[in-house]
Image (cartoon, rainbow, N blue to C red):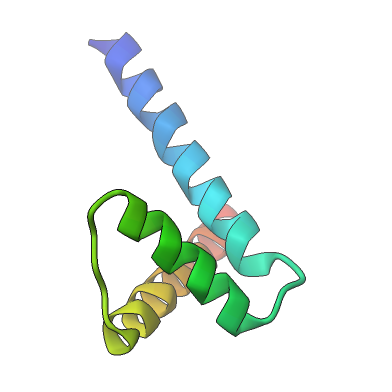
Length: 71
C-alpha cells in the first residue's frame, strides 16, 4: 500500500510542477490560457473564458498555498 502512496504522490507532484511551470513561464497570460485550453480540449474538456479564468486562479492559489506550506 505504501508503494501506491508514493506513486500517487509522485504523479501529484509532477502535475503540480507542470502547472507551476506553465503558469510561471515567460509568456503572456493570454497565450498561457490558450495553451491550457488547448490541452484540455484535446482531452475532451471544454471550458468557457470565465471557467478557464477560475481554473487558472484556483491553480495559482494552490501553488501559492503549497509554497507557503513548504516554508
